[in-house]
Length: 75
Image: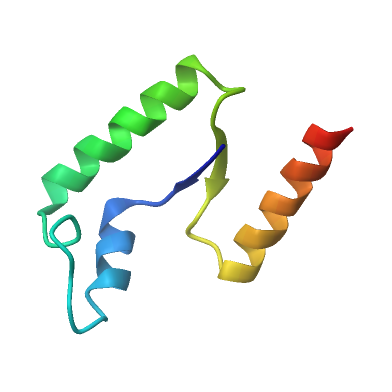
């Protein structure tokens, strides 16, 4: 399983470019920060369960990072 990690400020800036937000996207920065911290704690305790991807990169770079991790898992 992949966890696409992104600083909540950047994530919210990306979503706010859209016209409509869903209920989760409309939450404040504190909510998103707490959620991120929770996922990072889970990933730290179970590094083989969640593969961390840096989602601050371009979509193409995130995709390539995912492909490389999949290749490693299939070896």
